[in-house]
Length: 193
Image (cartoon, rainbow, N blue to C red; front, side):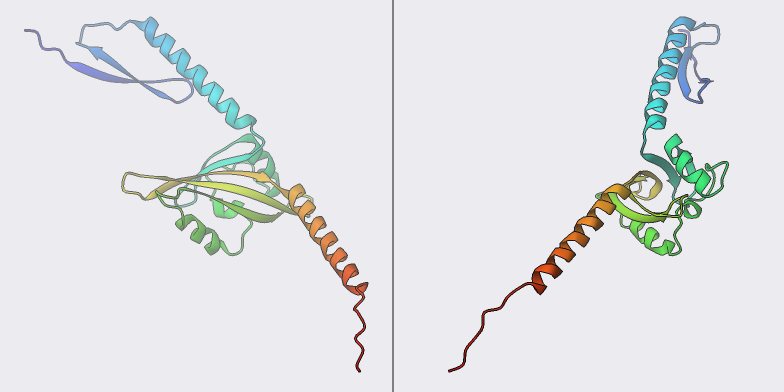
């Protein structure tokens, strides 16, 4: 019988996704049409995914365990690049982006993520481009290798400043009401016999 040799050919698509194509024998010619359809479907799927991520108003980023940023969406870029006077964010270290003097608290938070608890949230207070205090809520997901070691983190953040200011106003109003109620409180007079 004839021995068939299988070759695995990696084709590089425009958007950087590799497609695995199996070709039999040296002389066999694989049909290009199904491959072109697969490439087109893959490209379309990737474009849909990218548009969903980039059109989000939440800040989305991924970074390696050493802090190197590997991906950001447009909302992240629009918010943080001008704030830190950066042209390119990818390749920078997340520590430089976070406006935190005490990064050890963040490292402790990241270490708290595990295979059993890969996702947690944290609130952060930051200074905006307007110089004002702002708050952000971040959902952090650790991505683990087969040994359970975190190799990458995916973060999604949103501005919660309006909510925090509303909470402060409610708290201040409550404190004011409590103070007024206390000063106008009349105590019953106790008579001694």
